[in-house]
Length: 304
Figure 1: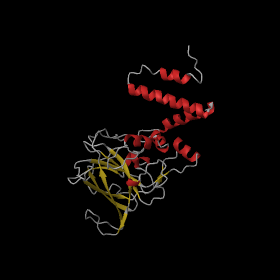
Figure 2: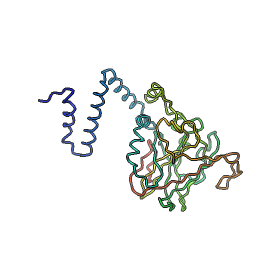
Figure 3: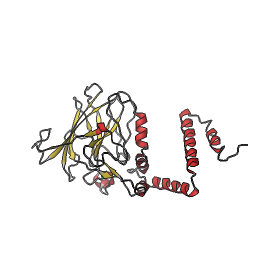
Figure 4: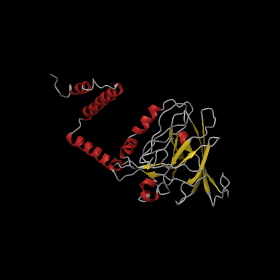
């Protein structure tokens, strides 16, 4: 008869998964047990500490809604999201670097014409984004859906605003590349912002004296048929938090120099209406496959 004590318990639990039909599930569960048990032994975990951990995870789940994912936020600030991303994208072969999806890929990303101002009703410095999607050799990829989303001038995403339910999305859209692989749109210059700190994850960040800030960026999800889906950000050069992103998402290649412009017209030939900023970035896609994530609480079924 096995003795379920400190020395024999882990092996017994690992053996309990021996008949798991799915080999990958068996491996993942057994390795999880080994790591978790090892953590308990190495830290001499107390009853009070384990109860706190259970309560923390319970409150994390309770904070989740159809448009808020506190567990993704927890994964992000612990660096797990970026680690999972790194081990799944070890060989980029010249393709654009990936980074975290983040917890704000929500709602419907409506397809809009090139040049649309996705932040038309928001205050802020105006910005023109021009981009291109190509393969690894620079060949343009036409007809590719690209979802974009970013925070406003105060650091909030649309889904964080009380008006989201009645007024709908803002600063998020879908564009489809033209025959030259290009797409472009108008918006406002995003700013650095804090992750939500009104839940258990924010409580932890504040408690351990970490700052809660992310450097300014625009999210892109490029989903070209025949290529790996690309989930990434483009960060704004010079942001004070570029070297200390709370979710560890910055990579050098993803930092773009934003040009300050005073031209009376933007690149699409339409009036600028005052000073503006220009973001230019090219996305290089890696051949392959895979399913792109679906936005949380999307209102419609989308084909892309």
